[in-house]
Length: 149
Image: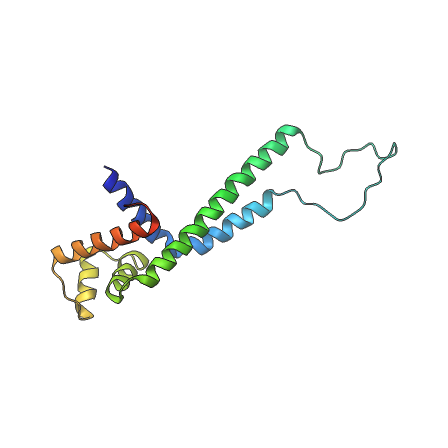
């Protein structure tokens, strides 16, 4: 069961890699939207200024904003870490492995389409060799990510 978990996790990361830039931009925009907007204006403190400013909020609201901010920052860091790790490992893969990753996960081709494309590029392989290569590449990436010993 644990074997399938890491395998699926790595495949999900590879499928999502092409969308990480947009996901990071969305998280940054969301984080900016929940942060209280502050201005550089000076507020006089005194008896004449009894009205609450828009930045005043209850302790519960401030706690909720902090918690949401914390979760968004955590997700943002995770996405950036995944992007960096996948980019680094793809630079270390062989041309054949990179071609496989590009066809299977970036272009989302079926197994048969990937095998045909590899064959047309001069890298013929049987179905058995193809799935062995897939397992080998996923395991290599999982080891790099620290998901597999």
